[in-house]
Length: 70
Image (tube, rainbow, N blue to C red; front, side):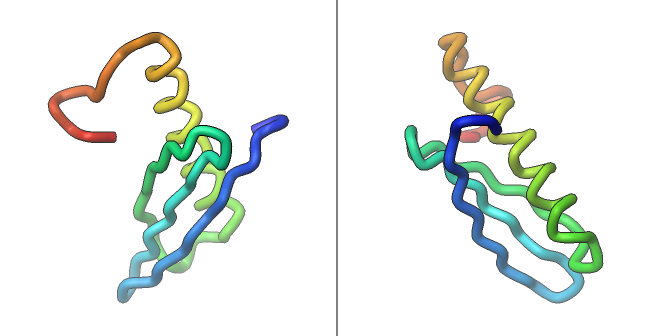
């Protein structure tokens, strides 16, 4: 994400790792879960992709989809 600061938190739970990504400017937070064996860079990229998706939806004035609070 060019020109945006993103904060990451990794929490390993057994064979999986939960990655939380937070946009420092807006406070928007998303999380993804992936295998603990996956490279950190791949998990970060997946979390950033989801964060971009959520930020784009917010900019378009669209709320959460399917009743989920994303």
